[in-house]
Image (cartoon, rainbow, N blue to C red):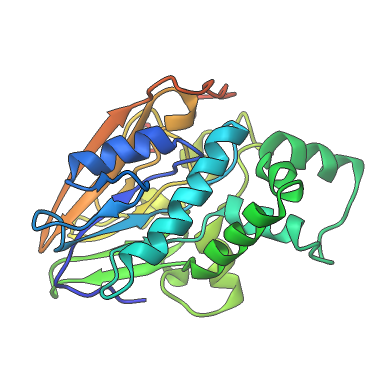
Length: 277
C-alpha cells in the first residue's frame, strides 16, 4: 500500500503490550488520550498518522495485552473515520496468534508446538478465554498490511515491513514475499549465530542512498542503522525503550521513551546485535 504524501508519519517499533509506553510516545507527538481512551485529533496532529510496525501482542502481561488490543481497536475506528491516521503492519506474532486461535489446519500440533505456543505466543491463551477480545483481535488482524511504502521523490522513499527481508521480496504481492516481510529466519533456532551471519542480505544489499527500508522484529539495544537499512525494535518489553521513526517530507528522525515498569519486563535470552561490525 502506497502512503499519501500529505501526512507526517510516526512509525513505531514492536510494542508487545507496552501500552503505557505507546501512549507516552504518542503524547510526545501531540496525540493525547481523552477520558474515553481515544486519541484526540487537534491542530497539532491532524497532519500526522501513526504506523505500528507489527508485533503489538505477546510477551506482555495479560492485563497490558488486553488493554493494548482494546486501545488499538477503539482508536483504529476512531482515527480513521474521515482520513486515515492509524495504520497497522502485520508482524509474525499477529500472524501466528491468528493461526492458533482460528485453528489453522496447516499448524501441526505436537509437544514441541505446544511448548512454543506457551513460550512465545502467550496472547493465544488470553484470547481463547475471552471471546469478545478474540473478535477484536481478529478484526485488527484483517486491517494489517504486510508492507507500506512512502515514495516522496526519486531521491527519497521508505519501505516499511515488520521483518527484514531480501530486496527482491519488498512490496511484492505474493504469498512467499508476504512470509518474508513478516518473519525472517528464526534466531531461536540459531542462538549461537551472529545476526549479521544469519541474515547477511541486510548488510550486503544496503546502499548509501535515501531509499530506506525500516523494520522491527529483531529486538535490539538501540536503533540500528547501516546505510539505508534501519531496525527500530529497541526491546521495550525487555525493559529498554519503545522507539519510532518520524517521516516528514524528505526528512527522517527518531524518538523513543523508556520502559515504565508498569508490568514485569521480559527476559531476553541474548543480545544479538545487528550491524555489529
